[in-house]
Picture 1 (cartoon, rainbow, N blue to C red):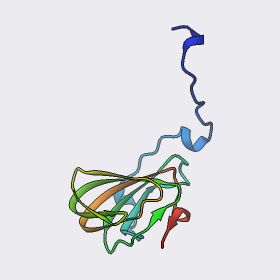
Picture 2: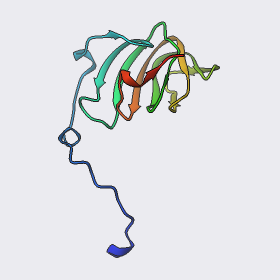
Picture 3: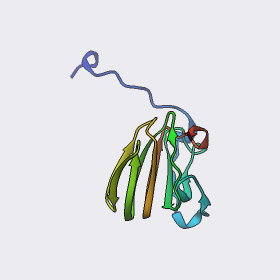
Picture 4: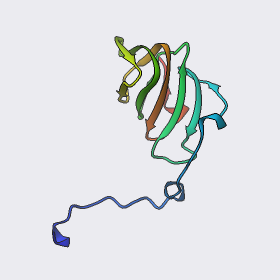
Length: 129
């Protein structure tokens, strides 16, 4: 393939935060109360603008939505129900749920989930009705 025929690529951002590897351990983080339960913020917008990552124990989840962020819920242990725009969906360990911006969501049950939010928008992107 000649240089002229190669697909155009997006330049890699030169932000120093994006060029450093991060290794963290769940045990190093204190739990804090969040909208959906008790979470540990493993990667935040202070680390990178690409995505945030949290470990969450579901507890008294409140229905909410995000204006710009897509959330990926990966169920690590347990199970329960996820409500997406009012529709009930059973979920269990090993399931992944993709929640686009604007979809109202909440969950119930006994489960631990890993949540990836992209782009990395923290509390300023959470909306309640």
